[in-house]
Image: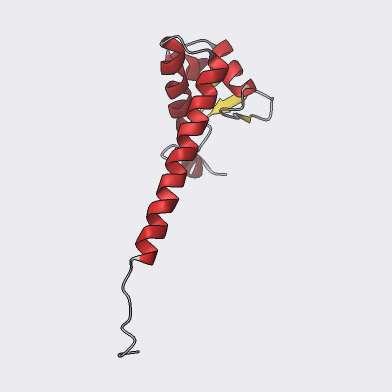
Length: 113
């Protein structure tokens, strides 16, 4: 991978660009919080060759949602489950809408077919 390839990846929300310390700073939390949401399987950070956790912007957005719930008093395991269920519900709604659109699409009249 060239330096240019690495630079281009910085715009990729899935690129694991942030160390645990930097990610915790960005979220205003502790590395322990990031480890806990990893253990709860909310996010799974990638690992560097040296075994250090690396987080993407997408993962940090998910972690921020969990942190908001925890800050409101929700236990961390429950917060992680809520975020997972919210995402599953959103995906199901998206799929239902796509199905409705495909079923309501242009219909061919039997006389013109």
